[in-house]
Image (cartoon, rainbow, N blue to C red; front, side, top):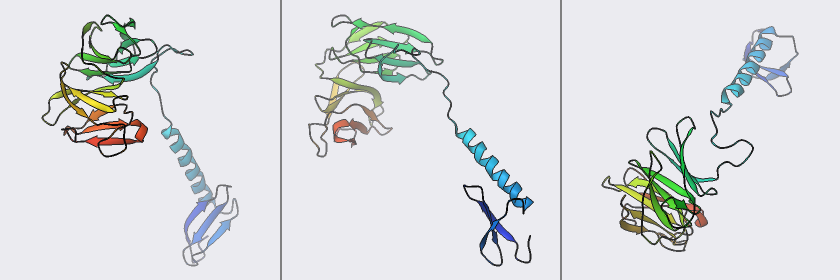
Length: 245
């Protein structure tokens, strides 16, 4: 097969034809099927590798939380603690639920209503911090606190919120724990101490300029205390310094 030139490399076209490039001539030529056993074997190896690559890339899903074939839960927001327990705001069910790492439900609390600490109206998000679950009780315009281990009510903040769409736990520039509450109708994210005292308001609007937001959805902090806000109606993520500038 060499004939003084030698095959330098080869390729296989999608239709199955094999081509060989000769070292001396530097040209490609089509090889008749069966004419070169070495190329045939190599071609089979390439095909096998391609099929193996497809098999390795296939995703796997270990488990699903919720009922099969029907809506057993209407989740809008969630958070996870350091042990892998999952906390879910079941907006459609007006409840908050906790699941273990394997998906087993640990507890479920809440009924629809505006008065007691275990009554919720369209809760949209939750945040876990130091054994406490902070609930964005959107319809009741408040933040509720639940014991993360048991789901029992602890307290509710008296601050006059707007439409709460996002609640998250973070840290400021000094490393202090903070709770971030994002309200789309107020076009801002407000930062609180874990006990519910307002520290600062980040953003204004509605608007498209620097520092302005339009129907924001949620927020998070990085290790330096910078604040990132999902600026929904402006189709962007806005970044603020730890002081809110």
